[in-house]
Amino acid sequence: MTRMTMPGTSRRNLLLLGAAVLAASPARGQGVPALNTMTARANAGTVGIISGGVDGTYVRIAADLASVLDDGERLRVIPIIGKGSVQNISDIMLLRGVDIGIVQSDALAYARSRRLLPGINAMIQYIAKLYDEEIHILAREGINSVQDLAGQVVNVDVAGSGTAMTASLVFDLLQVPVKPANDTQDVALTKLRNGEIAAMVFVAGKPARIFSGVPAGTGLHFLPIPATPALIETYLPSSLAAGDYPTLIPEDGNIETIAVGAVMAVYAWAPGSDRYRKVANFVEAFQANFDKFQQPPRHPKWREVNLSAQVPGWVRFNPEQQAMRSPR
Image 1 (cartoon, rainbow, N blue to C red):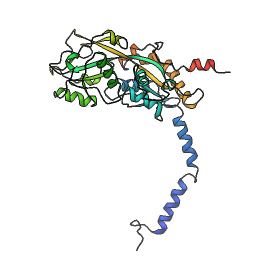
Image 2: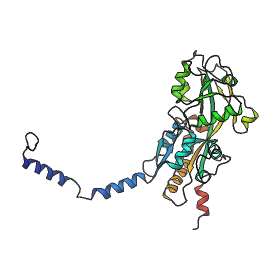
Image 3: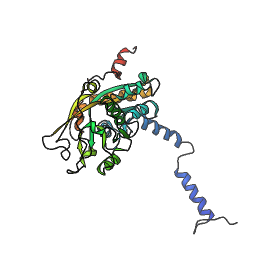
């Protein structure tokens, strides 16, 4: 068997080439400490934020957080596409690299009541209430009320999503039994336009981008959700207007609906830990730059945020208060 060599080269030339490469490279072992230093520096201020699907508001809020707060050195914000509020709660608790998540305010109560995760009361806190998210029910022609959905196929987003959770609660409270489907929202919209399902539910801050591409004249329309006493115990009255969805709501039209709060949730890291310090830095930067979120081109929902708003049933992550309690 003959040993293969590169065309036009000799053994002597190959040896000289190898020597040149070694001479240009760092001494053996020197590259590892340098790489370790670079890795530590890159991760020192990194915070991961789990958001929502590409068509929802959460992912745009997370993108705004990265655009405003990420300075590339002291603080690095990594937005992550998520699968909805219930899954985000789980990801905050269990996934490495996820410190913060955007969830619906009813997600924590839902997870507690169904005992989805042990120790959730002590491990999940919140940084701020963000805004209210409207519950959209888009239906095909011939469906004129929520009651008309009884026994019909209604898409409620993927299992574990905030929309699926809220849809289950709302239809139970309204005593309207539906046949839930769990397609992603883009697939559901296609099926709805083809008449394969009766309606789709989507919980998102208006205006939700997925509905902006629906042309007029399709027969698709939003169903009003009455603010019944049972619903108002958990949700807030709201509305959808022509300005939000001009191709789906007639001019000067107004669709009654309900809304649920969106919350910036966080893992309750132990004070003094490295991850606690990172989140505390994030909170400090968020508060210091809050006015920038309320200016274009940031999402209009930022203008609804009140940093002092309380979230019933939740504990606030408060590094300033913790610092006051710590011994000096």
